[in-house]
Image (cartoon, rainbow, N blue to C red; front, side):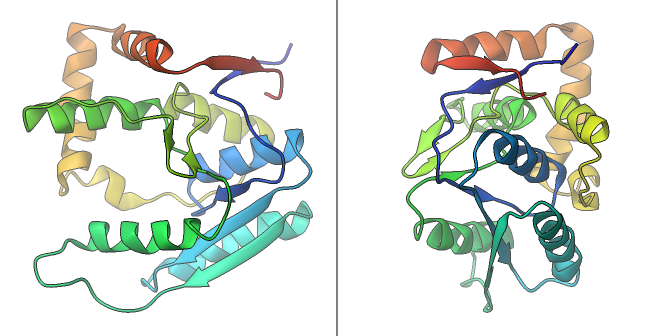
Length: 208
């Protein structure tokens, strides 16, 4: 029996998938490519020491599965006072704006972490399903479910070690805050799925 993946919104034909080479984007690309024929994988190479490793994984997967693969390379440095993450995000958005619809691999763990991060600043916010031309069909899918999906379907991906160092604010919340909250409320993710369902439509897809 196939395990259903609960997706948010609908997946249009002829869309692009933002593909970094990490688990979230690789799972999304595999998922979408099985359901839609006209898919383009879009990879942004930021020129870091590990960029070619990420690009290689994404390119190899697309080659083996006959998926159109487009690479955009960027160079340059952040402005004074601008974080590297913010700089890279601007680069990616500039690339994504070249496409009609881009799907990104934001997931339920991102939703929880962003709610906590913005809450600490005084105004908790949910990640929206759509921002401009960017849609996030995996918002109600947890990271654990994504990793299980990759394992079931032998989807390759690169582990980003910086996600688990605790050095950045988001990774600190991921490593130290969320586990403690789950001890207090094991149904934490379920509550956030409810929050999401009030704001956008979810559907179950048999592509599991």
